[in-house]
Image (cartoon, rainbow, N blue to C red; front, side, top):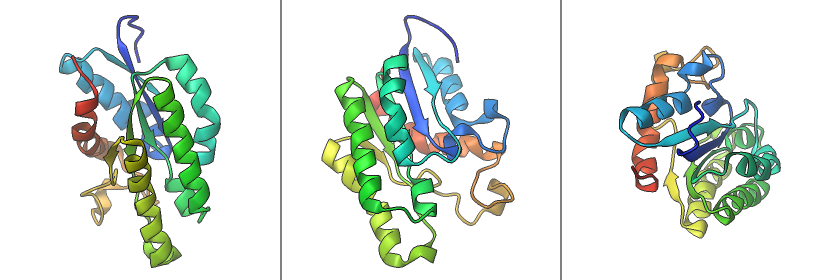
Length: 189
């Protein structure tokens, strides 16, 4: 998304919700973020290292290389949804998120952790602990937190693809609107 040697960097480490699954990837919210930054006079280049199907374990495996390659000032971590959908261990998810955030902070980056919510089919206990994991990691590392990427979108069928999981292209601006207020304190002109 551009190659300005003087631009600061934002790295997005996410899953299909940030990779633009099922839509033109040039319409995914990280691309819209890059456009918004440019339009508003921020000198940031956005590197989207999101992969559809990615879990926190995969993100943990890839974070060191991504940090080395992009040298970001800000890392947006949007991982965990696939852990939850697969009913994976919340202890492992927590450890993976801790490792990703720690590596990012050790590299000198500010972090925005983006949370997710799960449908109740795995039980209320799992659902509550899943949500709390993001809050706990953000608090432990003193990072910015967006509690729920899809805030304000639930129940609006027209905002989602046929799978009822992935937002349509026209909803990507809503995702960016959710991310922007939490990201703004982490960036500067």
